Length: 496
Image 1 (cartoon, rainbow, N blue to C red):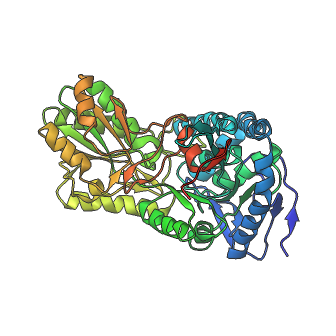
Image 2 (cartoon, rainbow, N blue to C red):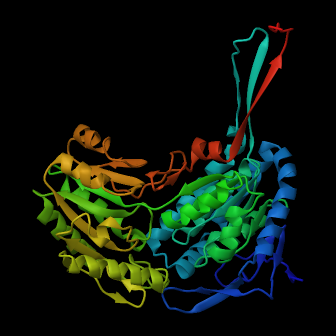
Image 3 (cartoon, rainbow, N blue to C red):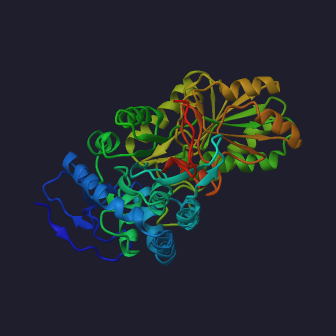
């Protein structure tokens, strides 16, 4: 029998996080395997959490199923109040939350700023969803009939979240789902079980969420993740992660007719035309490639640069990259480049760099690692088929590919299985838009870089970058179901 422990209203990296949160209780689950929580900057173990077994996920779904019908009956003002209180708590505990992001996830100050600030904004916006789940009346071709279109909560939402922006990418699914009257089972990533899961449970508990509406089961992907995706009680499975993993999650979800909301990988191009403002384009390139060490699905994966400005752009980007400060984010607020999350990710990044140089590219700067700290790397003479360009490298790597014509730039941009985010730079905004309109991407940015998110705009991709969209009215569509009710208000004639 799992030991039940009392939760402490403490938000810090040193708080006791060694428990699962199921049906309003923090269960130590001493008989389970443990997941060590590491500080990627130092390699230090900062704690451990239980690794959920299949029966733990089942218990979470049982609790979520029991709680959901009553939560759906709760008036929208009360649901909104709980979510709004979570936003207030995030603001109240800012220092502790930033510490968790820095220590557990290796987040430098600029990454903390965007993740923390974006989380607050997202949760405030999600609180409004309780009142935005509206229906409508439609005319009928049948005399005396009234057509009523209603939206209802989908039911139980399974959420499987990633390690790279764990708090924001978990809560962008959890908060809307709860505001709309659903219950949730959340399986955070193994590398960030606190920021991506247990922290969120504590915040909602402190905000007064009824027991069972949110359940958090940290664990590995093959056990807890697969069971979350394949559980027959799931009505929606919201997954953020790699395309390879997303295919399996989607397959598991649709086998029991759950809707798969999948935000997957990207191979995002930044196109720089010959008339672009290079100051602006280079600024955008530095941020878009190196924010959070490039460990972002919407980071710039390829820089496509017109041959007339190629050398200058590459030189300036390399110089800027070499100046970025590397280090432990907990030691220095001026650090820009923190650690890669784990050894496996680091080794994959270094392999892409090495293979691309072997294929004929030139290493302009970077290319080395000290522990989990990978230097910001700029590669020139790159072709679209080289490993750092054709793969989602997910690291601080900027491959620069030359092109001669707009048509070639468009062809290069689209020569990928992905279609998540893209950007185009030109002094002629109309020309930039003409090029952008021919690039296959769910999100496009003119004279900016690819790392953009706003709570009221759709976030999603095309091709192998996923199914559906997060944020605003788009996530309301995915976390609710539509019901048509017709009312015949006067006798109707039938043909027989």
